[in-house]
Amino acid sequence: MKRLAFMTLALSVAAGASAQSIDAPKVVVPDKLADYWVLINSSVEADVPNIAKNINTPGCAAVSFVVDKNGSTSQIKVQRVVPAGDLGKIAQSMAKHMRFEPTVANSARGRVFSWLIFPFNSPADADARSAMMKPCAIDKLGWEDR
Image (cartoon, rainbow, N blue to C red):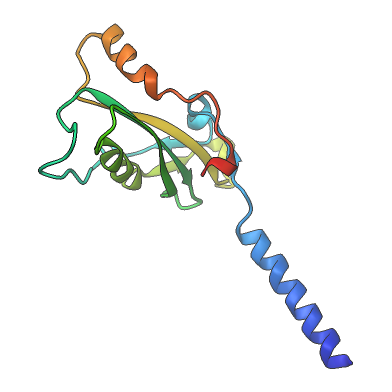
């Protein structure tokens, strides 16, 4: 009987520790991401294939990710790509190489879930660039969208 009680207690403690380690991060819209984490890369590397569909076409990709306590990204997911093709894979690799530092307001290094739009082959004109990125805009994502 004592052994069963000990095993039950051990399992409940392990389950509690496991639940704490996978707590959902705070969902932060892109406009507020800099209130928690600041991108420190001066440029971001990307794995670009030599041949890919629509690689030279103007387009965009919306990518969601988690900024972890150490400032790296994880749980990267391509949410939207316009036009259809391989730009999403490139954007995903860019998100993988992003590095962040916490702001003073986020001194506890709280994890956040957010998303960004990566432009590709964008026109020089600001209005044309904005119009090109508009199809990738995402108003809202939740943790369940990861």
